[in-house]
Each structure stands twice: as C-alpha cells, then as structure tokens.
Length: 198
Image (cartoon, rainbow, N blue to C red):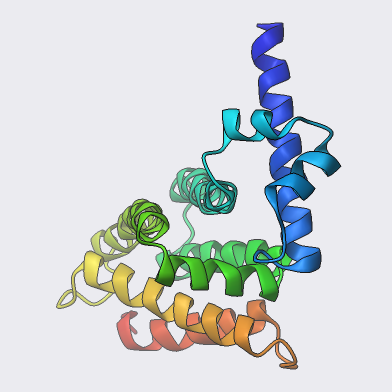
C-alpha cells in the first residue's frame, strides 16, 4: 500500500512539474530532461509513468472529464433546471482551462490536430464528457424544460462544439478583455434561448 502511494506521489509530482513548465515556457520548448530534473527523478522514471510528453497533457483532459462526471452526479440529484446545470458544468470547464492558461490550451489544440494518437485519445475523452452532457439534456427534456424536437445528443454536441469554439478563440486571443468564463456564460445563455421551453 505504501509503495502504491509513493508511486502515485511520484506520478503526480512529475505531472505537476510538467504542467507548470508547459505553462511557463510552452509545451514545445519543454523537454523531458527539464521535467525530470525539476521533479527530482531520473529520466527513465518519467517513462515508467508517461509514454510521452503528450501523455502528461492528456492527463489534463482525463482530469477535466472526471471533474465534469463528479459534478453531473451531484447536480442531477438537485432540483436545478438543466440550463443551470449545463451552465455550471461549462463554467467549471472554463475555470479549469483558464487555470491551465491560453498558451497551454493552444498547445493542446495544436497537438490534437497534428498528432493522430493524441487526437484519438482526446476524442475519447470528449465523447465521455459528451455522455455526461447528454444525461443532463435528457433529464431536462424529461422534466419538460427543453424543446422536444432536438435530441439530447444533438444538444450536447452543439453545446460542446460551441464551447470548443469559444476555447479556441480565447486561447488564440490572449489580450481579449473578456474572460473565458464570461464568454462561456454568454454563449450558454444564447444556446438556451433556442432550446429552452418558455
């Protein structure tokens, strides 16, 4: 048990150091040697936990998906309308991405576009996240809060595509005076004008 805890601590330390370096100097400029030196581990230790630098970045997507899943479980047990739950979920994603910073999110987009393996693993994470949003939209439809002629899956797809568009715009325009959270809140409000029953 103690050995497993030590392994998890080492993995978390490597990941934390790597993310910090990605944020400070950029993903492309960060080397595995820099990560291991700052984490105080041997280069081989890095590869015991992560196959590549991309694997570290992938952990962010996994973490975000886990956070959304936990939040959905909690929020579906409340009487909050679907619109409020969806808004909360997207604001959670916005907060996590703002914390990651525009440079790191830009790197994520770049790697997701140029690296097929990374693209496939991130697509799976997005699909898992989409399933959580489908649950919320389906609940809203069952409660009579949302229009019936658009499927919950279509609503979730549109909402996620909308968010990724906002995320891309935000990370490529870092001098914008509007925060990612504000942009997300505006977009979700507009989305629900079209699908929420009056």
